[in-house]
Image 1 (spheres, rainbow, N blue to C red):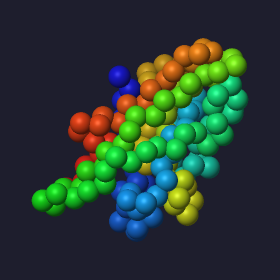
Image 2 (cartoon, helix red, strand yellow):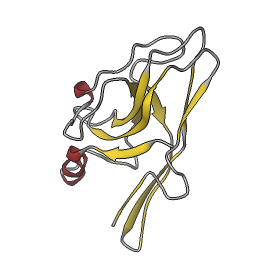
Image 3 (cartoon, rainbow, N blue to C red):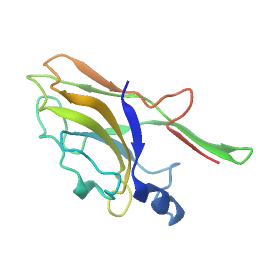
Image 4 (spheres, rainbow, N blue to C red):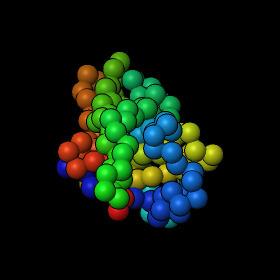
Length: 139
């Protein structure tokens, strides 16, 4: 399973109202260049080349719920599935989540798959956002 890492700037972006998880469009993109927790915006990340089913900018993420209960906010997302078609995707290792609606496309987190992989034609890659525990909680 991929390891979840949040970008340091995400905490500040939340406090400065750059994210509205009830209405903003979140996306996930793939990269083979190591992200750093100090990266802040999409432009800091080198995305893999579009093609063979991989769309430039990655995939839009569907939000299941973004609610607060008893002082704890929980964001639940539907898993994203990349599907290679017409050939393989370029090599990737990290899936990066960012806010496509935010002013500078602020980064949220990334998942490290541990080593580079090439998604062969016809094969899926599912980015698991942990629907039971939620993508993240804030207490």
